[in-house]
Amino acid sequence: MKKSVLTRYRVLAYVTGVLLVLLCLSMIAKYGFDVDGAADFTRVVAIAHGWLYVVYLVFAFDLGAKAKWPVAKQLWVLLAGTIPTAAFFVERRISRELEPRVADDAPAVAKA
Image (cartoon, rainbow, N blue to C red; front, side, top):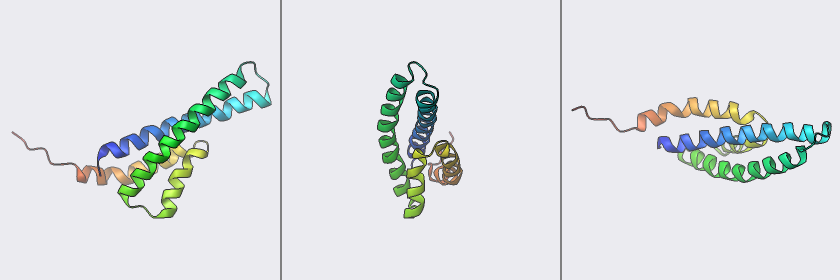
């Protein structure tokens, strides 16, 4: 498995996680405290999170397919982008698990 597969998953996991936390905070500001401008901010963040979550799903599925995960693990990783802060913890666990495999697959660099 290429390192780029893990890297793009990690980037989208963080982006999705940050946007989901921002979405939750903006919803609290909009509905809980009736803050001016919160409705527009919520709309923008919701659209961004929605589209980037789809990209996250593609990258996470690609990673799971290349790592040959069982279905239950694949579903857990896919759903992590819908639970606030879960993407951060799941990403860290997955990265720790897969980094040795990515390092083993890297070609040996010939010394001159």
